Image (tube, rainbow, N blue to C red; front, side, top):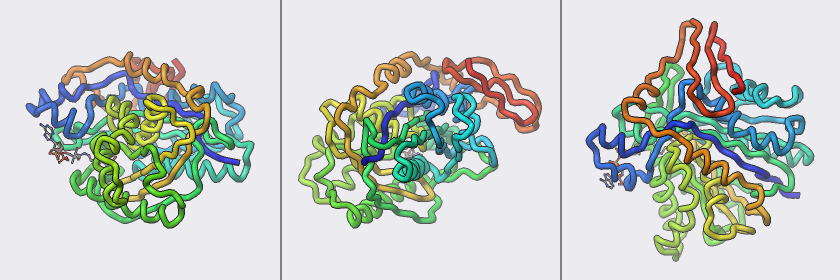
Length: 388
Ligand code: CAA
């Protein structure tokens, strides 16, 4: 019996800022963003959107496939938590009409926690092969205005159904892990934006890749040349390009730069238009690869590198299942991306500065999302979500 990803779907806000607009406002060369960091647009959450509404939107198509009574566990990964105590997934549980015996828990370790959720889900399914575990990862990436991180914001959620004998990707049991207590990126509880030591974070990312890969090689018979494609954590596209060249060099790969680029380029398309979605980003990258791959991926091995600042990293592998292309949501994803509304720099600043009530007053939130779920109000410290 194999275990892995049976279905995958993602969601992002209907608003985006083109990084040319940001560059213009900052009097910067747009190529710094389009070429230098490899990003074109960044998703901006509407005032009535958050990790809960995005997660519910991402997961809805998967729940429609299997039925709301078939899911035994939902694991919710995020680093944009909305409550110190209650798991965001409990709101999603109600919005999706999941059965009361479905357990829900939230996981955190920066951008890595979706991978922890995936691995835990695989273990649960291996123990009870008839069970289905819904893994959801949802985040809003926010940095202070005027900082180098500003151009690498974004928002998005991904949902994956983990089952026995999956229809998309079988996940291999071997993993390579790396943990080190470092301060490259963090967000104290009293802040709504992340703090980051940008250049250091990229160095730690590469160091973690090396160490996780070395650990993976101790556990797995697979070598660099056994992989046809790679999915990396995607804070911005150029980071994946640098990481892949780094890994190829470590392994003395004979592949030239164009061949190396072909191993990752299809995984970068969606993120280039969404921006960083933290926990969700590598798995939106997987959806991008499966849905836009220029070749048949059947039987191909994919290498995954998941990185969460702070830091925990993991390298693992998967094999694409025959018939995978019949189980994708490609058209719906492209329709969603193409229907988004571009915002001006002034509108971006308004969205960025939308007040987050802290004193318990009642706040009605105007309806602006085009998604099926929205945050309608915050009243007496309680978030009120509705189905549109
Ligand atoms: N045309 C083409 N390229 C240009 C250019 C132009 N006009 N101007 C600059 N560039 C290039 C630079 O040469 C540079 O390329 P290299 O990296 O290949 O040298 C690239 O554009 C970026 O330029 P800078 O180094 O000057 O950019 P910066 O210092 O202003 O910001 C950053 C870069 C530090 C990554 C910043 O975006 C940042 O802090 N981002 C947030 C942190 C982050 O994402 N870290 C990633 C690792 S941590 C992680 O992965 C977890 C997570 O999700 C946050």
